[in-house]
Amino acid sequence: MPPTFSALKGMADVLPPDSARFEALVAAFANHVQRAGYGLVITPVLESYGLFTRVGESTDIVKKEMYDFETKGGDHVALRPEGTAPVMRAFLEHHPAAPWKAWYVAPNFRYERPQAGRYRLHHQVGIEAIGTDDPDIDVEVVALQAGFYAALGLTQVTLLLNSLGDAQCRPGYREVLLDFLRPKRDQLCGDHQERFEENPLRVLDCKKPPCRDATADAPNQVDHLCDDCVIHFERVKGGLTALKVDYVLEPRLVRGLDYYTRTTFEFAATSLDAAQNAIGGGGRYDGLAEAMGGGRTPGIGFGSGIERILLACDAEGVFLAEHVAPALDAFVIDTTGGDMALALTTALRRVGFSADRAFDNRSMKAQLKAADRSGARIALIVGTDEREKEAVTLRDMTTKDQELVSLHDLPEELRKRLQR
Ligand code: HAM
Image (cartoon, rainbow, N blue to C red):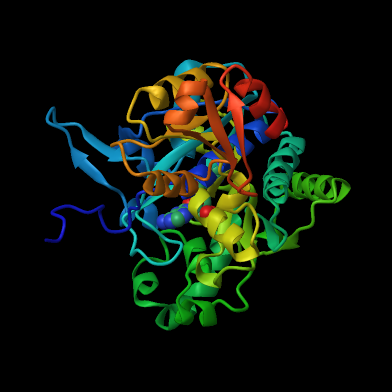
């Protein structure tokens, strides 16, 4: 009979050994960003619907993909589609000292059409640095992201960089772009023919061929930056060059959220299919706090999809499960049906070893198979003989060598063999 329930479409269970990679990736990320002064921030997975509409009414994330519903109390709420708005909300709510450097790991929900590398539930690791518009923090954030991918062993990664201007120069550019688009209205995709006036920048981000063709020689924001934005961008580019973080200028990089100002960036894994090769992206969002009803609060950060990073690791053959999954030290096989397996695993765990055992009083053969499957480095076999001698047969699972070791000497012998 087929099972009654399965995970929802576009949402995956993460089981061992993949979960070990997931865990190791988060640990590596935590270590990487904590060394730069970022602290873990955990925000609820459910927020007011209105919080997310602030990230961009003209984006697919808000318009089409939100998991939102009314609670029993009549509140309109939404599952988090992205991590920046909740962190900014927390900043405005709790007033921590600025600059506030936060990191997170969190599930995000987007009602997308599931396909390879694009899911309805994905997880992001990310950082946000809130409360300063010093271009040096832009450099720090981008360099941290580049450094993280390098630490995982990824090499086929390209950093795309752009500036989207600010409240001073964006309105002027918007007019220039609208003047360019209006005569081409009929050539745009159906969706954008209707609504390109809402946010003309979205047309540049549209992946559909009609919009691509019609905007091939569209004016770019970088050519219409105000002096302050030019100075900021020059400083960011100079800082990245000084840190030897390679980048490619991509004047058409708009990104899928409306809150971006000035520095915007995305990391493309060239080992992946182009449609889903963004393993992470981010940018500055100096107007977001005000859109949420807060005071002027600049900020910058990035989010990176764990599932996509792992796909890129698969493609490059780095950070694989066998490199990162912790191996068990010992697996206890008790063929006497007594309580040695229970006593021994407990005693070993107490003195710091990782140990597991077989259950259900299975045959020696079945227990050895279980030991093999467990990935343990050493099997400890207890038969009647060993029990009488207060000893175990220690079997090296790699070389298959066996040796009788007294229970008294066992911890020392294990330490020696495991090189601890
Ligand atoms: P985003 O570009 O929408 O930005 O998502 C960040 C990353 O999450 C993407 O580059 C991708 O790796 C991953 N991702 C997004 N959607 C999916 C999906 N449906 N399936 C699998 N992976 C996905 C943000 O979310 C911003 N909050 C980033 C940011 C932080 N900007 C400033 N601070």
